[in-house]
Length: 502
Image 1: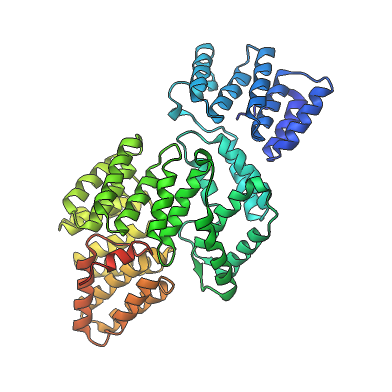
Image 2: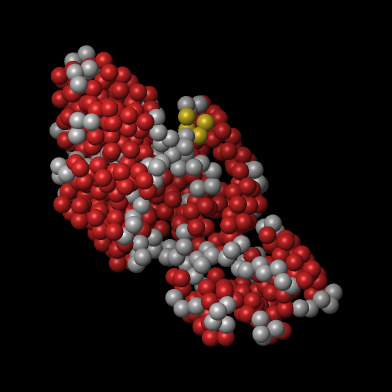
């Protein structure tokens, strides 16, 4: 959708309502103006866009056609019509319209739809609409936010994730712990909101989101609302997978993070999510992890092979995921090959996991360089910081290792990295002969993972050995051997690693 603002006062008034997210109001205003005798291509085009925002695709297409007929030398209405064809599920007709636009106006911005639809770019208006969505959600205007979310789904590019990524997680930034009272207030407001039946699917989805966001110091009020919201994970059954299938991917991820993890439920949700086009690397990767957690490593790698075939353009992410899974399995040669290929394709986390693979094969200088590249690419990557600290410990750089590991212990996402930072720091102090400092490191880790059941239990077990330094060191070294390449303690992966004992 393209608001051009070149249609005079009448069209501009309609477009102003659309920018505020009031598409029914915009359609009503345009209809009244047309009934009063105002008739122009910009007004008809704005009316078509307002109808589009209301989900009335056929009427919108007819209106866009009328707008194009009134001003055949202007590509704007034809662009709206081409976008409408795409949004309404008619890609072949959209391609034909795009080719016609490109022939007539080869240098015009209408060429965004030309040729391969994977090159389609989001309208310049979308960032403003996404900010409006965030603001409405934060203000707990859930009906208004959900109406705007419906419209934003119409605008998303066929292979783009910008819109869905905002709709998927509008409240809590990744890795930030939410105060329990604040989380409870959000859950309570969402339960009480008067949501129209056609938007009820959004309430179910966001209940799964809010219930799975980690909290600080769970309280009684939060626990009751949390238990009530958990039911939404199982009740989420989108009828239109082409439109809402991404919700199932998110629900599957949340089932993995639940306590205890629901591996089978996650697998079922992710399988259904893959029925929602376009295929996404993230869905294949999470499904592979669910299979791994169920003890089906062959199936896990098989899903990644399918993902590589189904997701051209996302090979780097999938190769990085496969490399990570091979780290968990102890296949360091395979992990190195995958992660080097992923790094060449600029995959975001490839350097961090490549550092682990290099470390596990004894190439400490190369591992340190890879961890440094990961930190430069993303200075907030706590996992990269942890890995760099571990490599420095192995290289006997105690001062550098201690600095990295202490920082990782207090990182913004402690539930992901604090356990391994604490284990590394404890082993560092034990190697230096300081049993008291090792106990302090374990106590710090225990404090940070206190709400992560398996990790908290392990910390308690190790603290009980703190008066026996030799036994404690042997136990921690055994844990590192057992863990192979795993350096995360998320709820769904940590129990898999724990099962390797014995």
